[in-house]
Amino acid sequence: MSESPYPMISPDEAFRLVTTSVQTLAPVRVPLDEALGHVLATEVRAGENVPPFRSSAMDGYAVIAADTTEEREVLGEQDAGHVSAFQVRPGTAVRIMTGAALPEGADAVIPVEYAREAHGRVRFIKTFPVGANVRPVGQDLALGDLLLSPGLVLGAAEIGLLATVGQTEVTVYPRPRVAIMATGDELVPVEQTPGPGQIRDSNSHALAAFVRQVGGVPIMLGIVRDDEEALRQAILEGLERADMIVSSGGVSMGRRDLIKPILERMGIIHFGRLAQKPGKPTTFATLRGKPFFGLPGFPVSSLVSAELYVRPALRVMAGFTTLRRPEITVRLLHDIRHEPDRTEFQRAVVTWKDGQALARNTGDQVSGRLLSLVGANALLRLPQGIGDLRAGDEVSALLINAPEV
Image 1: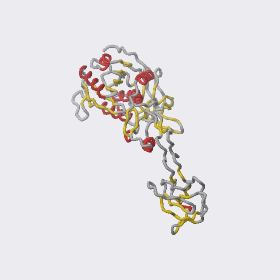
Image 2: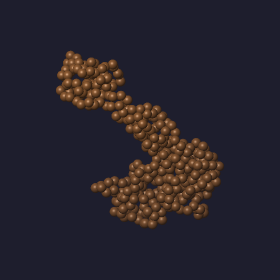
Image 3: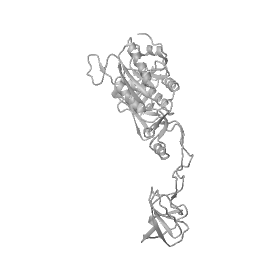
């Protein structure tokens, strides 16, 4: 084992390198009902007026507003979705339902509660001006209106608006496909009982779930043994099938840690060591224009590094412009041990009391203890250069359950 040739860079510098090196994927056309959660790639304008005809805003009677006839003949009923050849003249009215097209000659709707109808005749106890309770052409959307701008995340309202103007497909940035590989001779599939010296592969499944949470599409490459050619072939398969590769394990300084030497021959390594805990050996490279993240083998190190670097990379690729989790100041509820040599991200639960954010870590913070992430809603950022902290001290916390800002 020798000294790493990679300089130790800060988490902030690593974030900058990732977000400036990764490229947004080319836009694609997707069916409207598959567009939820995607980022819109082009502007959308109204190709028609909505509503395209004058319509009633409520149940009532279509009338001529200036008509002063005391009792009027009811010509019939206009239902939504049907157009009858009614012609409203002084002394007449048409019973009309909400959303129905206004009949010829009418210029107002008197609500049903102000009408007294009997034997085909109707009297009104209140008058209404021209345009009352009438939705004019283009009230909601006018032809040529800008409806949605590029960069907007499509939610239920946006999907509904696209449907309103007849968009059956929409141009969006695609969900990144992420090839996931776990490395190590000690790993066995989750359904297999481990033998002596073996452990189940939890990282593949955790990272696949993580990718889905971000909005990506995981592609499982399985367990790859600590063999240089096997690893190289797995990476080539990932480059063929995916937009990004994420591996776990094999990035430290042991004799069987082969990922970094392979990456050096296949592409460009942007960083191979971080001044952070957990996740010191996290590696980021570009292979054939595609990002590769070599994450540590310890489960917590893997997921924390994925949160800090893989997540923003995936968001850039998917067209998002907000990349950072909210970071707030919290007050510690108990003493915390912290070695000052690196920035440490401790898993924690943040609560609020009387307007103050309070934080308690999740117990033992060793990198193999996934329980330290279960239920956590924050990562405490304990800065390099500062040692142990005391109850009541203030530190920064990344809110990992909150949307990016």
